[in-house]
Figure 1 (cartoon, one colour):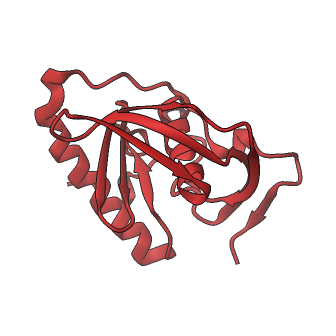
Figure 2 (cartoon, rainbow, N blue to C red; figure 1 turned 180 degrees about the vertical axis):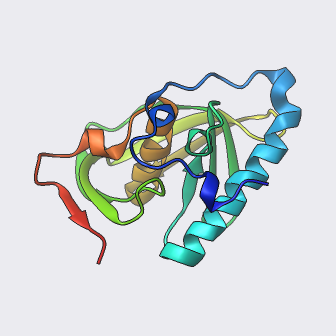
Amino acid sequence: MKNLADLLQLGNPLLYEKCSPIEYDELPLVNDWVKDLHNVMEEIRAKYHFGRGIAAPQLGIMKRLVYINIDKPIVMINPEIVHPSEELFEVWDDCMSFPNLLVKVRRHKSLTVNYFDEHWLSQTWKVSNDLSELLQHECDHLDGILCTMRAVDNKSFKWRS
């Protein structure tokens, strides 16, 4: 089982790589990956008091997999953002891969995400505001994009207080 020590930190070259889609025949692997993602997220929550979602590449699993756990666990296989709103908003974003740094980014206010769940059933989720920001952040990880690369400007960084 992976733990906090396995979480890739800012600067690790794997964080900047695009992930491969999960194929149907890889579905049996997803359950163990999700257990690892869940375990590391719980350790982050205990240590840093934040964490709503984590992407597989943050643990060096270079697959298009996102795990969200706010009210209940949601497994997102091969998520694809569609219909992002034209309206944007600014938010201070955080990331488990650099837990003490906040980055001001601009995100779409609402969007729809299509994905497969852990049973390979097609799902659609329409979200707005903080959930929209969260899904954009996690899906960016799958494309090798960190919120530091989306900073509004060169003054959009601060330490978590």
